[in-house]
Length: 311
Ligand code: G3H
Ligand code: 13P
Ligand code: ZN
Image (tube, rainbow, N blue to C red; front, side, top):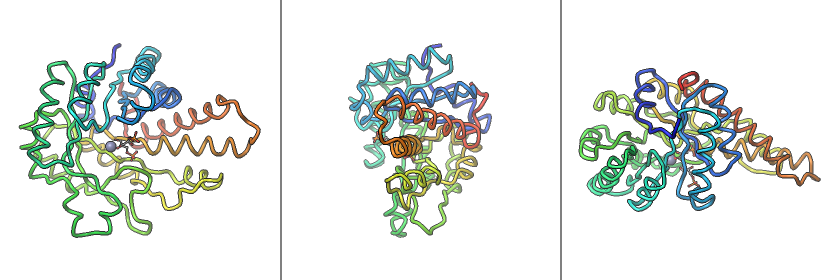
């Protein structure tokens, strides 16, 4: 099976009350860990590449690694550009074989976001590629302490219909309280997503796939392991998994996870090198890191996304 778009995946996910995991990839071990988990659980998969990942690993290397994953697993896998910020970057990924791109013009004005998104959509659709757009900006920890600016970060449900109609995008990332990275909420506060906003969006766009960025849950075991082996991730807090599960039952069809991959890998490598200071064979520490990614992704597929057995 060749790489697929997200169209059919999202239709099934919407109707089935589950979501597809979109995992960021940067190298072979990450791709292998994720795809091994999906294969064991027969789960559909989105592998996504950021501008930074593409600069780090090179488009062709990533493309070939993902093609190898498709060949080895036989799973429906979509290859997606994460946070494309220009038409040229999106075009380059479309021309280079990606099946899905995100144009993130969420920091621009409503009108500028619409016109850039529409430009990407026109090009992508002509080439059989689907487009994710974003409306609203993700909350950061600064927004949590500044209540007056808090609402301005969230997606305004009254804007979504016009945005989707005018851009013709295929899925929409919304801001309901998630944020990127490992420090998502202020220690001592109650991490809570605005599922009421999701509900309002869903009412206005029935059947339309919604995307959640910034959805790592920052498992405490990884934070503790990193801290116990010379690192410092104190104060790291993620999104509670039960709230992500609830979002996946509703209109959310794609859940983005990157930080949890980084934490799983870093915890494993730190522990291994700390316990075996004479180790200098990369296979001996990257192998366990790959297994740690696999185990974490298996947990996400079963307990958060609910997409096991849906490939
Ligand atoms: O949302 C961003 C992703 O976590 C990718 O991060 O740009 O450092 O590759 P990156
Ligand atoms: P996390 O930092 O929560 O993993 O979010 C990743 C993401 O949204 C990638 O686009
Ligand atoms: Zn993101």
